[in-house]
Figure (tube, rainbow over the protein chains, first blue to last red):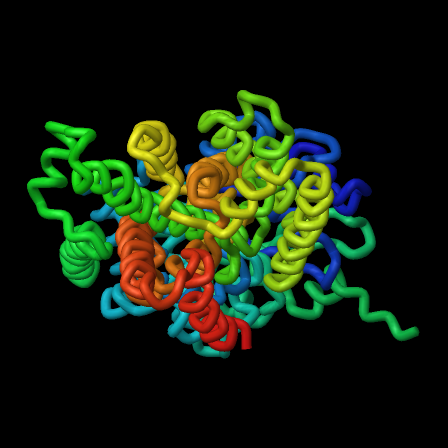
Amino acid sequence: MIKFQEVQIGYKEKLITISDLELECGKMYALIGSNGSGKSTLLNTILGTLPILGGKLSINKLDSFSISKHDMAKTIAFVDSKFDGIEHLTVYDYVALGRTPYTNALGRLTEEDRLIINSSIEKLNLSQFTKRETFKLSDGERQLVSIARAICQTAPIILLDEPTAFLDYGNRKKLITILNKLAKEENKCILFSTHDIDICLEEDEINLLILNQTSKAIEIHPNSIEKSAIISIGFQLVDK
Amino acid sequence: MNKRAQLFFLLLIILLIGSFICHLFAGQIRISLSDYWNSIFDFDVSNTNQLIAREFRLPRAIIAVIAGSGLSLAGMFMQTLFNNPLAGPYVLGINSGSSLFVAFSMMTGIGFLQSDLGIISSALLGALVFGFIILFFSFFTRNHVTLLLVGLMLGSFTGAIISVIQTMSSAQELKAFTIWTMGSLQHVQFDQLPLITFFFVLGCTLSLLLIKPMNALVLGGKSSQLLGINIRSVRISTILVTALLTGVVTAFCGPIAFVGLAVPNLTKTLFRTQNHFILLVGNFLIGGIFLLFSDIVIQLLEETIQLPINAFTSLVGAPFIIYVVLKRLK
């Protein structure tokens, strides 16, 4: 789904190199690395908001730079680390915005759009929230609503930037379980950045993408890897 | 559309029609319904009542709706575009742009520029130029208040240039311009209505195309881009539509303050939605009602006090905005 070949990424200066990596559908990937190591840079590169500095990045077998913004929105859905909610914007209307790439010039929702909106809401058990204002939800509820919006976008790839950062333990666990389910049942390719190593190790079948601090490359590991190994690869804990 | 919006629409449509009719009969001279009918379909120049109806009352009522609706729509678009509840064509200096260019055209003595089309073109161009100036500055700040200060400074800046132009113009030109700046719904003539209506309808039609991007833009620039919205073209077309609506109103009524700021806030509070289709219709109706109502009050007070429309909208609008400021930007 997302294929990297000798891709160099960074803001103007090269930050990381990804020599050969392919992210597949139906799988979930956790991106782990220290602060400033390039997690957000990588996500922004995949999203197309940041150009690659070299190599070849293909998304859905197409060259990433050749995909228009409009087609990109149909291919990748993005969830930010925090959605603060917006006054007077109801959960339903927010989730419905996921249909934006598909609606006509006037933004009219078709019957099919409405079915997709409703099923996205139901998948996350948010039916009782539809009329609530996003502004008045808790952080955990808002994050679930954001994921419902991403599902509603019906894109094969979902990227999430530290989706668990502002959640308590229970909500973090719930969120990861939901994402894992999505990857398996809906055959989505899910990539999220995180600092929650423990939760990633607890959940079944997450692939870990660790940003190697020394070689500035990305390594892929199954989550049977030891926590200490992750730390030694991704985080240089050297006494100074 | 939810039930709440439908109910409000129905009430507002009744209110709009009601206040339009009240407005027609609010002046000091009593004019009957048949006078109005005849003034349009069987006009007799020698009949004073028909003359008043055709040349004063009808244009004034129609322009009240157009000005109120146009400025409110422009305000709504600017508030969403800049994600700022305090944005509006007046505070951000779009009106100032129109004023400056109209000052040029009224006081330069060039014949074409002093014609209706000349003044409309100047006002549109001024609104457009200042719209792009404010858009340019918006890239440097995300702070709500900073952008307003920039708008305020644009206002002061144009004020100064207008003063300079004024010192160089003839007494007659100066008088015409000064009256224009007071803002008035009274100077529009029957023959000018088609031109104004044309630009207004054009602005409203183009507005419909902005509904979808505006709904997405509520989430912010980056998120809307990731939903496939072409943010650059949306910004430009929003400024175009805003300038069109503001420019045409300002050309004929002079600068009218606070309508474009207060009505969109009122509409949002009333409808409690971010659906811009509902907001668009809401602003259209409430803006029209607000200005009709303001002008009815002005006409009722006419015997005791001569109140320019701009003064009245400020008297009502300013306290409401202070309330919004205190509530939203604590």
